[in-house]
Amino acid sequence: MSQSMTSAANTGSASDRLQALNLALPELADNPYYVHHRTVGSSIYISGQLPYQDGWLQGQGVVGRDVELESARSLARHAVLNCLAAAVQAVGDLDRVRIVQMLVFVASTPDFGEQSKVANAASELLIEVLGENGRHARTAIGVAGLPLNSPVEIQMVCTAVQG
Image (cartoon, rainbow, N blue to C red; front, side):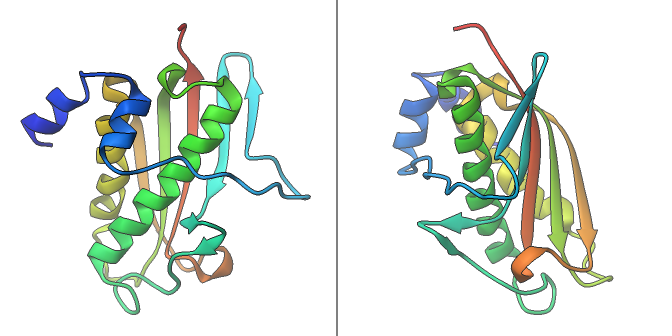
């Protein structure tokens, strides 16, 4: 991670940093089968989020066969924005979100082996936007397939910090 990313994460509010990146949190569509988040005690469990933007899945296929690494990284950034939107639904303000753990699932060929590079794009965005509250424990896993043939799905556990 670059020094400029670290120093940028220490200025202004998380919402200001998100806006400075020309990004916005999406509106999450309701789903009749699950909720986007569930709070238990001080933990907020974020349902697996796909790389949707404006209601459209931004990519399909298997990383290492149909999807290039850089495209997968971009898709991971979209998915983590959806996770942040769910976290804000739970706590009310982006500055109150602290990421505890992130699980990144990458639909990939058996020989791909760079799932962590896909996950790094999401981790970098979290740290850019949330600063120290964006640092997290993480697992990146290669899987045979994901819902709707999505290349990436991200699940998170968060907590609310006092504002």
